[in-house]
Length: 476
Image (cartoon, rainbow, N blue to C red; front, top):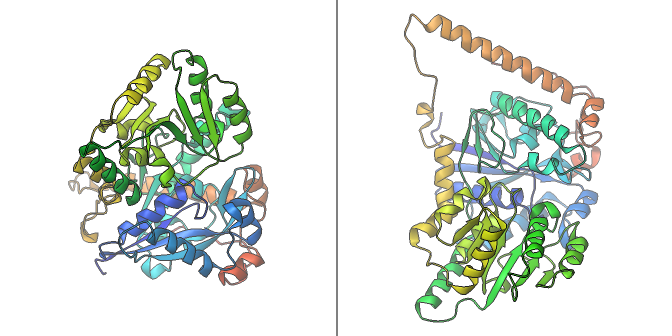
């Protein structure tokens, strides 16, 4: 077998939806393929025109996968200094209004031919596998790596009957990641503990933000005024993204924060409510529509305030640090990676929040060193990913079960066989449940998504879906 690895990066969203699971896997694919030592395929969802209109902003839609691919490639090429060499494939998908998520349709493992199936990187492995009905990932791919992006438990706890739903989801996430993945990478300790998991931030920032940071550093070194604006926050404008916590803090301590001006940027379902709540404060809190964080508008802000505790690793926090800003954030597992940077200030109480905010507005940010800039980059993130996923070793030297003495070998083999049999039985149960329309509907799946419909087949050039049910082939 060739020693040149093939990595297939599957994710749950795609541009122009500006969400982390669309942007970060795209950068990951580009940087994994950068040195030419690996073949990389990014596998992203294709939505019908009707679903595109529901999901994509500014009335952006695509008449074909080729159009969509061209948009994605143009976006990434404008943000990196090299020409990306990865390929792009699409899997059929539907948008769930209830879950506000894109869900796979049919067996998406079929996107990668068997002869090149080597490593599968599942961005949001729980999300990709809740309703998976098809080939067992670990049978098709030599290695299956899951990267957990989202703190689903924290989100569902805020909903009606949240505790009960969270308990069920915790079990479901554990189940599907155990049976379908060899290794799980959790971006931070804010996510639930999962089988065979490690905690490692394998995300970087858009190089454009690091360029801004270098420019600001040069201005400071030349004695120029680098930051002319005060504090701001940017994020999807829903209460769960930290807006509730921020406005509560500003409301409670507004007498101690006299003169503070905060600009909030975001768009989302709760925009009107956030705006109304901000207007009730005596402080100058202005609410603006969402914009790209790379917009020059944000370059001159000195302080980024982010009280959110539902993120796993907040991309905008990393971007603000890369631009040389001071970041005020909660002392929370999601911010653990950022504590190594002098400009990251964490608080445990409202009083600390007030003091840190006032201090940050009165002082200049610490210069970002070359090493700190590297740690925020996608080059460093790719190095961390390869190590955490245990993909640095040659194929022939991948981690294997340690050999044992002859005396213990029979018992060891029996134990291993028993574990494999239990896992196969668990896979069979999941496949049986995910193969029933009534069960899928009961647990939130989009109706009739066992196989792609005629429209999706036509769009992607797939053979018409067979009506007969998929026959399970569980191979050890």
